[in-house]
Each structure stands twice: as C-alpha cells, then as structure tokens.
Image (cartoon, rainbow, N blue to C red; front, side, top):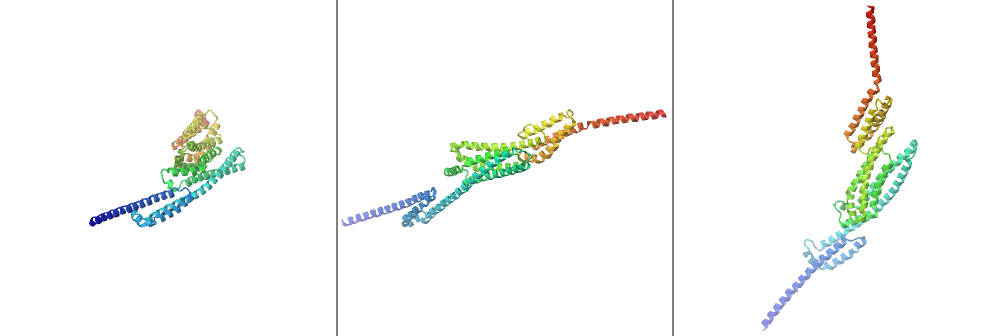
Length: 412
C-alpha cells in the first residue's frame, strides 16, 4: 500500500515538473514575442515621427522598454540570434539618429526655401520694372544716343535678371528633392505628399509659369543680336532639361491633384510658346535688317519660308532688269547683296541659323547661287551701252580704213 502511494506521488511530481517546465517555456516564448512586438512598434514610431517633439518623446519609451526587459537579457541574447539584446537597442538608437538628421535637413531646407522664395519675389518685381522701362524706351527717338545706350543697358540687366530668377527656381526645386528622392524613379506617396506641401508653400507652379511668361515678354519687347539669342537658347535648354527631369516628378505628384492639372498643361504650353517666340524673334530681326536697308520682304517664320521669300524677291528683281533704269537696278542689288546679305546676314546671322537647325546649308547655297545669278544678269545689262559703242566705233573704223584704201588706189 505504501509502495503504491509512493509511486503515485512520484508520478504526480513528475507531472508537476513537466507542467512547470511547459509553463516556464511558454512564458519565455511570450517574453521574446512581446519584446519583438514592442521593438517593431518603437521602430515604426521613430521612422514615422512628424516633428522633433514627437521624436524626442520616444526617448522615454525606449528607456522604459530597455529597463522592462533587462532582466531577460540572457534569454533574449539566445532567442534573438544572430542579433542580441544590445544590438536591438543599437538599431533603435541608429533609427533615432537618422530620423533626427532628417528633421535637421528639413529644417535647413525650409530655411533655404524661405530665402529662395524671397529672392524670387524680389526678382519678379525687378523684372516687371525692367520690362515696363524697356517698353517705355522702345518708343523713344532712335537718334537719341543716350537713350539708346540706356535701353541696351536695361535689356542686358533684364536678360541677366531673368536668367538669375530661372536659376533660383531650379534651386528651389532641388531643395524640395533630397538626393535620396532624386535617385528613385518615382517618389512614394509619403515623399510625394511632402514635396507637394512644400511646393505649394513656395508657389512653385506659379513661379515657373511667371518665369516662362516673362521670358516670352522679354523676346516680344526687345530686338536682340545673335549672341543674345544664343545665350537665351542655352538658358531655354537648361530650363527645359530641368522641367523634363525634376519637373517630371512634380507632374507625377500634381497629377493626383485634379485642380492643378490645368496649371501643368499651361506650363507645358508656355515652354512651346517660349521656343516659338525665340524662333520668331530671330526671323523678325533678320527681316528688320533687310528693311533697315530699304529691302522690304514678305513675312517669313521658318527656314523654308525665308528661302522661298528671298528667291522670289531676287527673281522679281531679275525680271525688272532692262525695264527699270540701270542705276535703279544696280541700287537694288547693292542694298540687298552688298549692304545686307554679305555684310550682315551671312557673317552675323547665318551661323546662328545653321547651328540651331533653323536653316539648312543647302538652303543657304540656293540663296547665294541665286544672288550670283542676279549679279551675272545685271552686269552685262548695265554695260550694254559700252558694247554698242565699241561696235559702232569698230564699224566706223572699218569704213574709214576702206575709204583710205580706195582713195590710195585711185591715186595710183
């Protein structure tokens, strides 16, 4: 009987021992899982903190978390392999430092953005004042040399100011796009929303539109030389490259904001208008060069029109040779060819036209071939009277020689 009771006690103790181990094992498992869960929550809170204050408030939570689980350090060292208790808190500290740096960068960028925004406001006002002044000077007497010098200075100032404002706008966009974002093909939703908020604070789309509009007005109110147009073309290419790169991401961000879709379309349209305005400024100035020398041509807006207009003009002038006086025909040729084409258009404008694909080398050859034809037809017509006089003298001379020969023959 005692033996039976003893056996039962042993069995009961074994059962209690096994159950006890299972309870402890289950408790260890729960400790590890709870630790991992709290770590994940803290890490997420650090990375999603919106402000310095929110981030700093997590320091107390991290310290409490460490204190709560310090007594289970040995258990966690074994269970977290290849990490351990200390490495986990190193990860939290590193995440905290990185997020803290993010806020530091954002704070700096916001300060820079404010400065850039202020610069844009100042440049916008300055550009408007310069444009108004230039328009006023365009109506002055062109013989007033002092006013002409002042006009040239204003035009140069405006050109530089417009370029500066474009550069500031590009810098503003760069400041909205941290390098990490630039290297990605597409911004994620959170990054895109942050850029959108900052862009709206700085009136980004409005400033891009204003810049393009002012650049177009600048071309409309000024008469520029090829070197000026070359600088503007380079500026235009840089600004367009910016819009194709960073601007593409901005378009993606704003595409989700339906009320902004119209502004994006307006900006794309303004880039097209600016390119067209630059081309038309070129053709208008070339036409003005001819008009200055009293050569009045029909309007042309591209290389083909330009070539056909000049060929047609020369053809009409060739038809008048012999109809108009030689002096008038010579003058028409001289004004067109010597005073305008070879003196101004060919050396000053043709390199710019050809370099920017506004005129083909073959079209230039056609025009100059027709000019040579004009000259060839004009020269003999201008000197017909000389050939007639020579012929008359020759005939008269032959008649005189024949009479002398007959007279001598009679005498002999």
